[in-house]
Length: 344
Figure 1: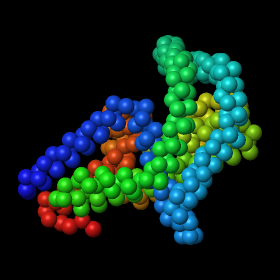
Figure 2 (figure 1 turned 180 degrees about the horizontal axis):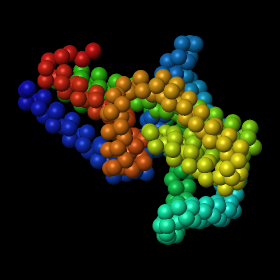
Figure 3 (figure 1 turned 45 degrees about the vertical axis):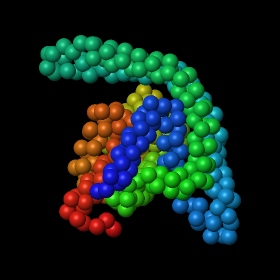
Figure 4 (figure 1 turned 60 degrees about the vertical axis):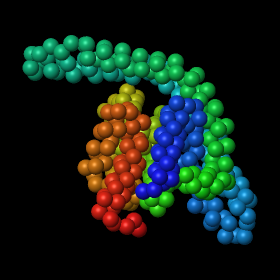
């Protein structure tokens, strides 16, 4: 490697480290920028499709951008009042849930004491309720902070999306100019593959979560269950979390169903609805949409999710699979480089 090439390599590595450090240092910019980048990966292939109708790129970008705004804002405008109303009513319903949990816990401990003679204290239930109340209080205290961030993102994300769609190729071209010649081909291949897999994966997870949310919301509305839209929304959002998401999304429905209807036919119908929705997801949607995109062994998926949750909590669980896919791509390229295998 020549001296100028070594200088370019050092400059490139330092620039990459500085860029990643800047993203970590300024989350108010990096978070909406990352969201915008992911959104642009999903919709960027649509721009050439629109251009096939004889339109200029600027016009095509404007059309796609307006379509994105409509797809994201129209549902929010339609369902936000209902969700807000249901969320406000939940706080008035919580005492009933707490009373139900205490009654069921008392009946359970009485049966255990009657059959085994072992006396179970109320510490477990009391600690759980205290933890739940503290968690809810903490969330409510953080609402103003999150609300301010969301309002800021509402302005920043569309702005970033527009310019990434409009000038993304120019940004990428300028960035590639600093990539050393010795690693240009592999770096270009890796970035292209990662962008494609990340965009496809996020789109697939969005479709998967939407399908689960729609099935559950429709079923709960048909059963005339209280908080149907809110419970369906929770099921859809939590479905983004691999493996644990469906369980987390089912727990609120089970608790509210038991508190409202007891061990009756309506609760049974709610349980069957969640089982059917998650069975469709696991048997059909996930294998067709998600697993083929990332092309990871199930064991690697499980390990990546565990590691993600260990280091970064819920966020780590969500991003663990695309990061594992990126790690696989990089590992393959390192192997190809060491053993002289040419990238496709």
